Picture 1 (cartoon, one colour):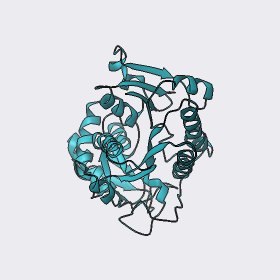
Picture 2 (cartoon, rainbow, N blue to C red; picture 1 turned 135 degrees about the horizontal axis):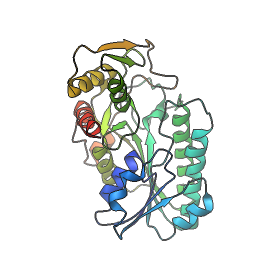
Picture 3 (cartoon, rainbow, N blue to C red; picture 1 turned 90 degrees about the vertical axis):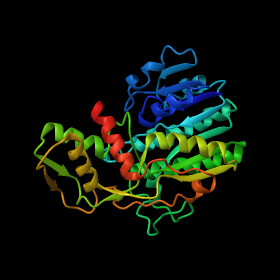
Length: 309
C-alpha cells in the first residue's frame, strides 16, 4: 500500500514509519517543528520511502503530495500539551490542519484515515475507567479541544463522502524518539542538577503509559480488525503509573543517590493537565489486542531508550 503519514518525522510518526516501511511505500510529511529529520534519516535511501518537509497549513502542497496514496495516518499535532501561552497553536496545527488533511483526502479520493486522538478529549472524566462512549466531553486543554474538534470533522467527512476512519484515543505514549513529556523533562533536569528534582504538581498524578511500539501495533491491529464507518478506540493499558514512581525509576536507572524531590504542590502539573486518567480498554480487547507491556514496564523501557540518546 501507499501510506501517507502526517507528522512522519515526529515521535509517534517516526516509529510508525519504521513499522510501515516493511512491505509498503511510505511518504512522511512533516514541517519539523517538533519532528526531527534524524528520526527518519535511515530510510532516506529506501526507494519505497519519501520525505516531504512541508506544513499541513500549506493546502496546495498537501493536496499535491497526497496524490495516489491509499491511506492516511494523521499523526501530526502540537503535542506539547503543556504549552497554553499561545491560544491558536492547537486551532491551527490541530483543527485546521485536520480539515486540510480531510479535504485533501476527499479531492484525491482517499477513503481511509487512521487518526491519533487523545484521552485529553475526556477532560476530567467522572467515570473511571473511562469508556469511549463517556460524555459529555469537556476537554480542559486547547490540545484536547483540538482533538475533539478534529474527531467531529472526521465523522462529518466520513458520513458525507463515504470515508472510513479509525480514531485512537491515546494514553500517554512513551519510548524511542520522545521529545517532551515527564520522562524527557526529568532526565533533562537530573542531568543539569543530580541533587534535586523539581516535580510539577504533587507527584500523585497517575496515568496509563503506553510504549510507542505497543501504540503503533495497536493502531495497525485496530485498523485491520474493525470496519465500521467510524471506529473509535481507547489505546492504552490496564494499569497506571504515578509521577513519583516515574521519578524514582529514572533516579534508579541513572544510579543516583539522595536526590531531593521538590514539588510545586498543586493537584495537577499545569493548567490544562488532567491529573488522574484511567482508560477502559475493553473495546480493543474484544478485537483481540492488548499491550505487551504494563504501564510501569513501558516507563522503564522508555527511560532506558531515552538515556541511550
